[in-house]
Amino acid sequence: MPLQSTFYDENRSGENFPQLALVAPSPQHSYDKLRITLGKDFARPPNMNLAEFIDSRQEQHLTELKEFLRIPSVSAKSEHKPDIERAAKWVADNLRAAGFKSIEIVPTALHPLVYAESLEAPGKPTILFYGHYDVQPAEPLELWTTPAFEPASRNGNLFGRGTADDKGQVHIHLKALQSLHELYGKLPVNVKVLIEGEEEVGSVSLWDFVQKNKEKLKADALLVSDTSMLGKGVPSITYGLRGLNYYQIELTGPERDLHSGVYGGAVPNPLTILTELFAKLHDKHFHVAVPGFYDKVAKLSSAERKALNGLPWNKKAFQKAVGAPGYCGEKGFSIVEQLWVRPTLELNGVWGGYTGEGAKTVIPSKAYAKFSTRLVPNQDPKKIAAQVENYIRKLLPKTVKCKFELLSTGKPWAAPYQAPIFKKAQTALEKGFGKKAVFIREGGSIPFVTQMHDTFKVPCVLIGFGLPDENAHAPDEHIYLENYFNGIKAIAHFYADLATL
Ligand code: BES
Ligand code: MN
Ligand code: MN
Image 1 (tube, rainbow, N blue to C red):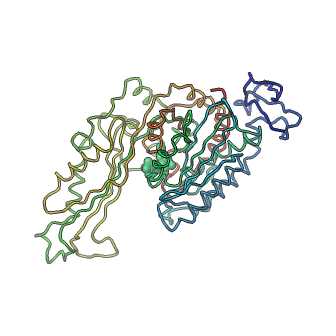
Image 2: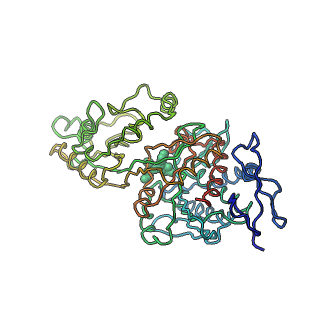
Image 3: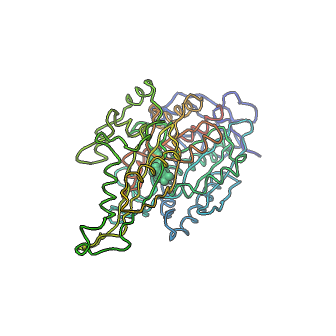
């Protein structure tokens, strides 16, 4: 006998569906207004609503998340290839537990992606959930309080690589979906799940997969949890991300390293030239000096500017998280604007010459730099790359050769949040966190979001459960457990509420 449920749809209390009964919200579970009365053939804990059911599973959820986190699925390093494969399989197996029957591990040119669908809610919306199971390298290992791949709880936080970015957040969805499946026997909406293993290395294979599977991936909305909340106690929906161009340059002076006493003074030093070059890429007001860099930057409307600057953003918390002796940023813009709506150019790494112990008197033959530009609407990544390359070539003296590479590129994204789904998201977050959600933009980049938005023209709902100071990409990455647990409840309510979108 098939299991049935109404998923809060009060209009569908037909004979095959368990009856809904409204009860007054209890103080502990004010987010849960509805209590569902069981059909007599329906084997599940009596009198448990969705939030109570999820609360009753906390320990199990945490144990399982730790298991996921113990797999060192570092996408950047080939030595972790077996772990990547293991993580993909773990995700696939877990989706099976959440009731998905159609699950594929799709091999790509680099790392496999996991795709699953549950299309058992005819007439209901289809939601595509996207996340990534790969993580950043854990180095420098000695700076972790407890080992990166041995998850440990301390002071209400769970520490480990991938806790916040993005395994913990992916797990929130897996457990929300599993809870709905276990409680009601099927999912309230049609769900497609795409969890990739290359996000942290630029999602190189994903674009190809999207292009080849446009029909399959079609959905009414994209749902992503790979961003942050504005702060503790402030559930947030992100409607804008910056784009990212990543570059590397190699400068060559002398054809080999030279004794700096024998030759110094009469030959070009590529390291010195490199540092001079980077000193010229910003002016004293921290404007990027590349000609044309700001030409296409979309002007913020005064209403949006007001809204963003009026958010409960906490400067003290920001400065505490950064911990620098002083602060700087593009003149004429608030910090929130500098972080979310202004483009930047950042030097990410420089090397060359001698960096080992003691002294070595050498003029290096080569000097290298990795750097990036964060982009905002309506900057075109290709045009920006060309402008950056031209300007760098113009600034460099004839005494060095320059190899310029664009390593990866991703477009910026910002979209209005008027569609009804955003109200549903806000309501669901309120059910999970007991607080009203705010709409924010963020400075990080998720290239897939723009690809999806451009390809399918659907609303993209980004609900993040990380916090800005949870050390994503750094030692002692962690997730605040209250956000993890409340996140499962909010997301489960969201999927349920989407049945009436
Ligand atoms: N989850 C982040 C992106 C992010 C972080 C968005 C914080 C909003 C707030 C993602 O995993 C990431 O790290 N992206 C990279 C770019 C990617 C192409 C390697 C980034 O933003 O540097
Ligand atoms: Mn991420
Ligand atoms: Mn990341």
